[in-house]
Length: 490
Ligand SMILES: Cc1cc2nc3c(=O)[nH]c(=O)nc-3n(C[C@H](O)[C@H](O)[C@H](O)COP(=O)(O)OP(=O)(O)OC[C@H]3O[C@@H](n4cnc5c(N)ncnc54)[C@H](O)[C@@H]3O)c2cc1C
Image 1 (tube, rainbow, N blue to C red):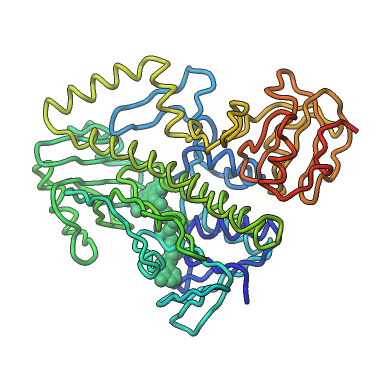
Image 2 (image 1 turned 60 degrees about the horizontal axis):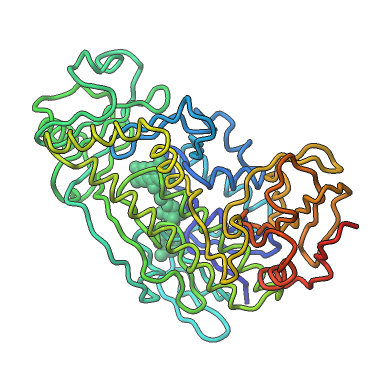
């Protein structure tokens, strides 16, 4: 029997496959599509996932040719512009990358590390027993000890396990189009058409005009209504433009057209026995820029735990922490994206007054920083346990600058292998040595150590800080015996 079957080769399933393979498993990914999707969905990643990709050494390759990678200069929060430029250390990180390229690179990584991606297999049925999960496929049958549904918003796995997906469906439809654009003509300067770059509001709806890469004009039309039946045609798109701005616009040749209605939903459970959900299968957010951050971070959280259980390092109970930690994070993302959607939709002069007031508020550093932390996910603290430990426990590890025996390092560079790291900051440097079982021990100096010792989980979260209680935390999280992580410098 295989260890893990992942249903869905989108960004979340591919990230999960890569992480499981990095941990030493040989996961299998099943996708109903015969070929990878070339749909131009996400234009980028915003939030903690950018730091996690840095931890794995993937930020460099993914940034190649990217329009932008680094601290976000701004963010359109429900059409209230947030301006981070000019402030030091605003937490939100951004990586512009088109989704098909992201999926290609994640596919390559997963395959290189030993995951197997099988395309053209649709999951139609699912039965589980005490030993494993059997998937009924369009092409036969597959069995594994665990299955993970990364099969998107219409998740079959979610439906087959009876997990509820409560929430709401927007009463507006968004038609989005990419048009060939030579940089000339009316949109060289949208104002020539009496329009602003970005969103334009009329009593009948909103029109978006922007360009995220050379040669492509992005136009979007939002108005009240249901999702179009069947594919959006060029004529349908033109008619929507006419309804919203009262006239035709000379858009170029359509490259891609879509019509969607936003939803705000969160799975009522992340786990049903031996089956887990991650990504859009577990949540749909009504505003952009968040879904992949939350979904891919879920994949990193789940992967090391599944691997630790399957490799016999820790008891099965560790897997319950996946939902305990990640579902509240998705709930918070749902709340902030609902707020964005409400702000964006609020009509008329009342809506303008609300947006103007919030724009004024977010010109101040403290509320701006608070919102940046929410968008990034750096306000996340996983339940730290009953012992009221160090404030860093349960938080994402800061990217400290370290002096090690191997030279200057950042914490991110210690996390490449996806193993737990015991970072001893008490002043002794020495060669990195293998720790208890699978824990890497690194002794380093750092200008302002936040604690004597940090025990860092493979997903970058601090499992323990300080020496008191360290052995118990190592045993609980990683099944490592205390002598192996003895907090005494050699
Ligand atoms: C226009 C647009 C723009 C967006 N922009 C952004 C953005 O800028 N930033 C951002 O973070 N997010 C953005 N998103 C959202 C983002 O694209 C999704 O959150 C992301 O695709 C979710 O990834 P996933 O891996 O969970 O699911 P998906 O990408 O939906 O992948 C699911 C996979 O499962 C497969 N599958 C489904 N059912 C089965 C089955 N029964 N058997 C086998 N395989 C199955 C599908 O073929 C698919 O390959 C955007 C979305 C859209 C539509």
